[in-house]
Image 1 (cartoon, helix red, strand yellow):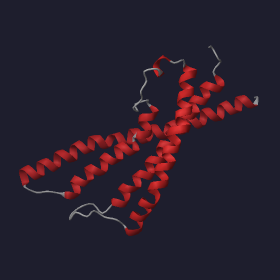
Image 2 (spheres, rainbow, N blue to C red):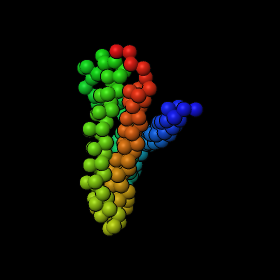
Image 3 (tube, rainbow, N blue to C red):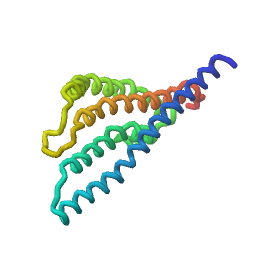
Image 4 (cartoon, one colour):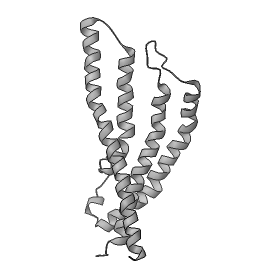
Length: 179
């Protein structure tokens, strides 16, 4: 085997691993949408028919909603479900798209992930240090876990971004030029 074959195999294995992590996370967190519906219905039924309210149940829906959006971002990127103005992009050749994807990931997405992680670190750390809980009576005592999702968002989106960058580089490096 020549070195380029080894590099290709390593890149493909890394890409599969990154994609598998992103796919598993997205599929796992997607089940929270069903659970949110069930819990929301339970909150309404219990309040309407039994006259009881549960701040904890209501807050759990907020936690699940946050988890779906924050942990599902990498999954959305992997499946090209992110917001993209593709007036020109869809008409580009695969190589031109790979250039746009690579540059967009390097210039915008990865720095954004780093910025989110950097500015939220002390915010999350402070929440953990005080064991932050809900300010509402009967609320959930896990606000620090909710805030931790911000860092997990930055990490999971970084993994998905690295996969997208690697995918673009594979097109640019190993695909023959047909232009």
